[in-house]
Image 1 (tube, rainbow, N blue to C red):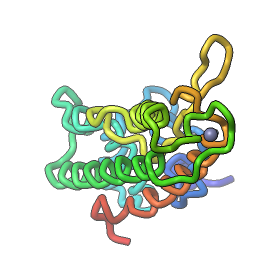
Image 2: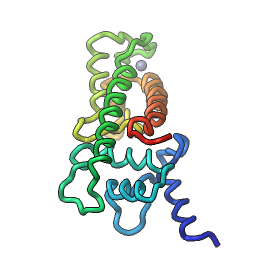
Image 3: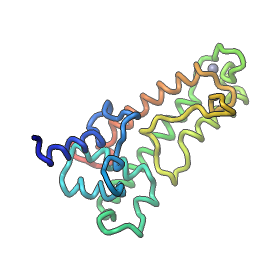
Length: 205
Ligand SMILES: [Zn+2]
């Protein structure tokens, strides 16, 4: 029978994957895998740092950082969920780098040069026209959210919303062919962002 330590490490490996391939959106990730009270991501990060769980650290840093500054610096947290100045510095450095990557990458993806769409009624038939730009802005705003929220750069964005039982792109009138392109482009962005995690959080690799 495998030891408890082994079992615990297996659970952690699943929820704090070492590779991009482990980051399946259908799988529970991060602090939700712990049974009982869900710990604050800061608490998990502190624990992994203390225990030197090196392989799980990039994801643990990301999980704490993605909630943004208020969560990282929350003064009402218990001591074990309060970050040391050194860890706090790393999380902020990482947050800024990931946020910049998210904004630039998403902007390039949505507003970047593209051939005119061939689908009738799609605003992207004229990619630099006012209808297209307005629709792109709606999509961009939806994906990147507010900086106070931290970052969503590793999350699969929702390009569609339910409008009266009909799934439509959040950018008015954008066709599914255009969304397909954005979806695969964003998958690429997530992969790049993942690869930078150890670097932006100052972890030894
Ligand atoms: Zn289109």
